[in-house]
Length: 136
Image (cartoon, rainbow, N blue to C red; front, side, top):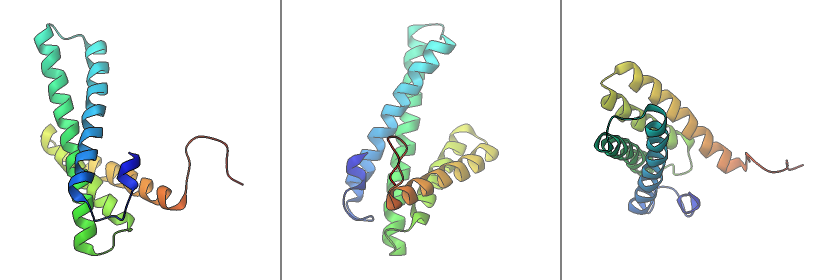
């Protein structure tokens, strides 16, 4: 996701959306592989359907996140605000709730994805690191 953080927020929306879509599709393929290994579908066709459905769902979530984050930065005219990422994460969570046909899933995913995305933005702005030696 190095290319996602390049340049100011709210610009290059198609490129950012495409990158988020590709990352989502890749995550969907990895998740589908684990799901197929652990749950053992009855046939190869069922495994293919599972992989396709999971990958398309995750790619859609990535696209919704990328587009809504970029558009909210443009509309609100505050490109570096973590609220834009919360909006993008919440929109993705709502789409997941629609996919699951569940208000509870949508609400929980909205809050979870939104808070996680906002924390990622805050961490990126402030230089937080997940790995490596601490900066003193």
